[in-house]
Image 1 (spheres, rainbow, N blue to C red):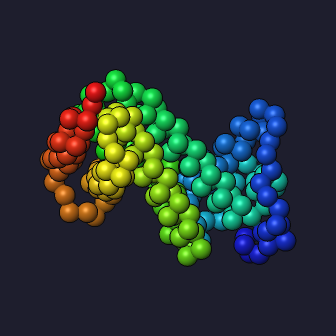
Image 2: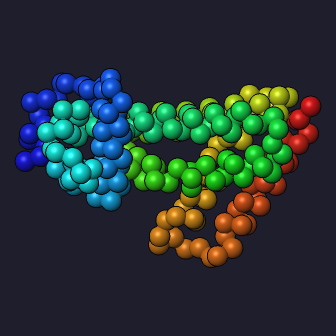
Image 3: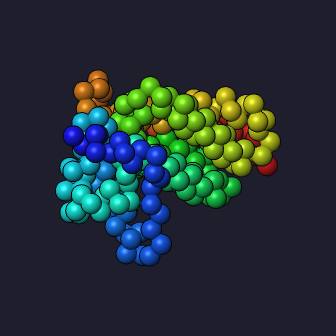
Length: 211
């Protein structure tokens, strides 16, 4: 019933609020949507449940987001903006951070964005047509990591930075899994070992490339 209701509005895009009150309402609705989708998955989540989680009327939700697909696109865009902002903070400090500090900032990146990433993972796994968006997220993350590495070590060659970025991204995903995901075989000291491994790896690649 929920998806059927959304079909007539499939071509309408999300409504961009102009006033602060509307912006706060949209932020609340998107936060509720992220929580519900993270818990139940995209297909099982309903617009009614999202509205209830936000403490809002269903009509208010449909006013800003005519269907779940439009809401999902808004969440994906929001997550991309959060990623860019978080990477930007690291990049802005890359020249003053030690290699170990930089390594820690990167390896903990996905852990700190866990609340948002759970919803995005649920979205990306929901539909095959979003595989292009999955690839776009991965490529954007690799590009930002490579940029940060070259800012830290200006003598680093771009192709080398890109190769290192692949390993760093893998370590970031592994740290998230070890820290937050249930059911994975691990031990209390695994995250400490991974953090140390990541530090030593980046130190071996970057230390000699710093001016």
